[in-house]
Length: 213
Image 1 (tube, rainbow, N blue to C red):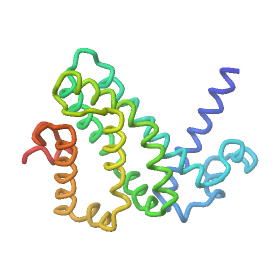
Image 2: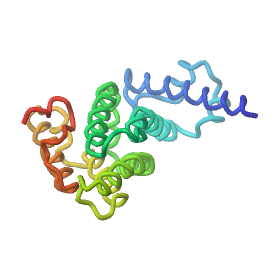
Image 3: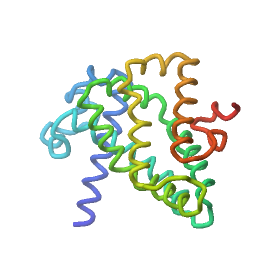
């Protein structure tokens, strides 16, 4: 049974990789299920064994990326030798590194997430997956006295939702393509996070290009 389950998950991952490749090459709206079938070599019946629709593939893709990011960040969260502030700095730095490695697909998701349904799916999956590890760092920081936070889990939830809500902004396209607007947004976001945690914004960077202030 375990091998069968593993095979099922591996095939799902293969289909997601094929779909993501096609989404990047052709665009999400322009990619059809038939395109995915042709590229993957799977039958229509076989495809529907794993996914019910293209929207379900998108949800699976978002979930896959978030899971990858959590695995990437997990060693930092679970490192008992690090203090909370150092963990927080590394968490933000590594999150930036991971996002940079996925920048093309992140931009594609940004354009897709302009729809209310896609935004909801993204925010829901992100809050379900990312809040817990982020809350652990904030809770540790509150105990160590480096973060001025009364409710770590709720604070982590609010901050994650704030970070991911940029795609809902009417100015999102400017933030994405205008270098000045992009930097101003990052500085504003960093200031908000710092004030919420009760630390100086100079203590951490959101992206590498944001270090020298």
